[in-house]
Amino acid sequence: MEGRDEDDDVPQLSAHTLAALQEFYAEQEQRESLKSGPEYDQFSVGAVEEDWQLSQFWYDDETALRLAKEALEASGENGRIACVSAPSTYQKLKGLAGDNVSISLLEYDRRFSVYGDDFVFYDYNNPLDLSDRLQPHSYDIVLADPPYLSEECLSKTAETIRYLAKGKILLCTGAVMEDLVKKILGLKMCKFIPRHTRSLANEFRCYSNYETGLDS
Image 1 (cartoon, rainbow, N blue to C red):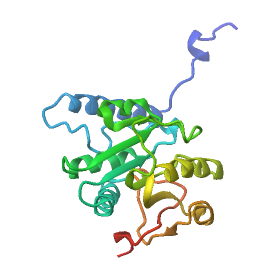
Image 2: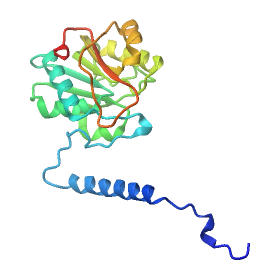
Image 3: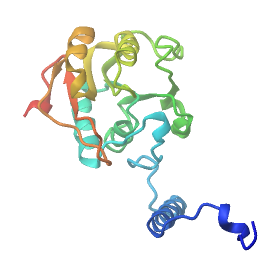
Image 4: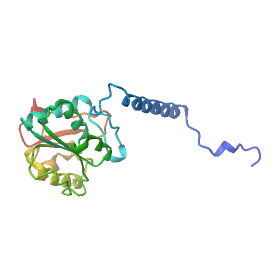
C-alpha cells in the first residue's frame, strides 16, 4: 500500500517491556561476571539459575538453610542424605556439612553435573532407573521436592523415596497435596512453611514421618 512503512509489520515493544528486558539482560550479565570472580560460590542457592520449563523454583535462603540443618540433624554422625529434585537444599547442605557426611543430588537437570559424583541423573518418570551407586535403603534421610503437583509425579517420586530411605523422609510439596501425601507415603504436615525466591500461586508445606525440628 502506498505510503506504508516497511517496518509497520515489525512488532514494537512497549517502553515497560523493553525496560524489563534490558533489566533481565543486565542481571544476567552481572551473574555471569560474578561467576568468574574470586568470591563466587558454586554451592550458593541460585548459582544455577531456575528453569521454569522444568518447573524449577528455588527456595529462599532461609528455607534452604532450615531444611539443610534439619536434614543434617536427622542424618546423624557420618550420615547419608539424598536430595531428590531439591537442588537448592543440596547446595546449602554442601556449605554446612563436613567431609564425613555423604550427600547425593538426584536431579533431571544435567547442569547440576558440575557437582561431580554427588550428581545422579534422575527422571521421576522412571523412578527406579537409578545409578548402581545408589543402594537400596542406604540413606539416613531422603529429602524430596517433586517437580509437579500431581498424583502421578508424587506416586512415582514416592517409589524412589521408598527405595532409597532407611526410614526418615522429609518431603516438600503443595499444601493441596496433603491428603495424597498421607495416603501414598504416610507423612504428616509440619508447622514450618517453606518459602521460595519467587512468589508462587500454591502454598507449599513440609511433610515428614518422624519428629522434626520443623515443628518448633
